[in-house]
Amino acid sequence: MVLSIFAFGIWSASNQILFPKWKGITKDFLECSSLGERLWGKFCGNIRLTKEFEFREVSIRSFNGYELPGWFVPALANGVGFQKGVILLVHGGGADRRELTRFIPFYLNQGFDVFSFDLSCHGEAPCQFPGLSFGNRESVDVLSAYLYLSKKYQNILMMGSSVGATSILISLPFLEQVKGLVLENPMLSFHRLILDSPESSGLPHWMVQTLIELVTIRGKFDTLLSPENSLPLAANVPLLIIHSKNDMVVSYQHSIALAKLYSGPSEVWFPDLGSHGMVWEANQVEYEMRVRDFIQRNTNDRKTR
Image 1 (cartoon, rainbow, N blue to C red):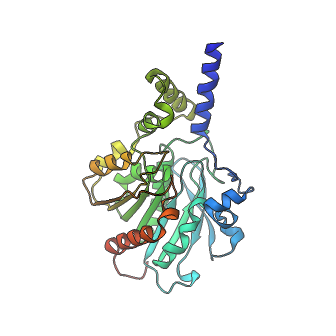
Image 2: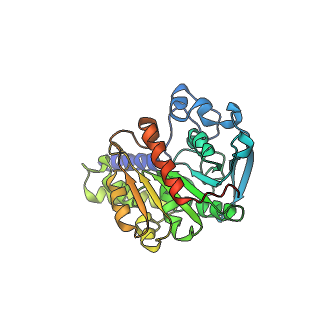
Image 3: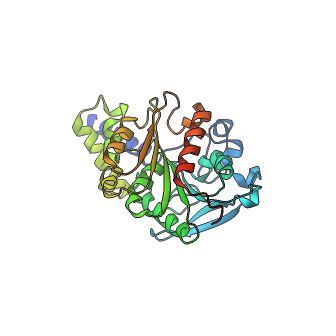
């Protein structure tokens, strides 16, 4: 009986880790509750329905072997009088490209085209391997999107949240042409994420290790690919790391450690307010000021592609 209860509990915990969900939001874009709109904006960030932007449906070929759907929102077509480059928005785990729609007006106003897409097993993207891999497969998607954009733009920025930020950092050694990265609440590694979580604090070490092993086996990924291992291999791209001290999902201590690992140019901001992935909502004025200054310092003044 005890063994059965343990097996059920650890299997259920692995489900929550591999298949995180946002309340009132479904990955097929069909459901959007009032709670979902409070988190992601009108129609849960679905710009097909809001019709507030001129945009194109696009797809990119991932090295993972399938097409990833996305949205391309050009600055000039949306009434901005100049164009400086492009920003790639990379959503968090369990979310999809709609999550970061609320940032589109801000980046358009800075003169950047906006490119957002669904990571593997998220939104409308294919899912050949079940569940989240915490940057393992997702970083390959990020690198694929970067190579797609690098053929078209000189000024490339990236912004990612949580698993999105983590995936960007894993691919960082290959992002040679990127002018700057805006990174919200990244993690050191999947292993550290689980070890440092409040839920793990009262459990014996062997039980936590069993959970980690079960998740990686079910999710078909290992823990070698991580920002902790990739950051020492890069030093050229400027980083702006943003992490709320109030984050209960990924401790801001992860970002402190990441900044220390990076020998290249970096800035950190640890506001007191804002839950996981919600720093902008709690600190909008200062958030936009810091990001705007970071962009201006790290991109040239040319207003063409």
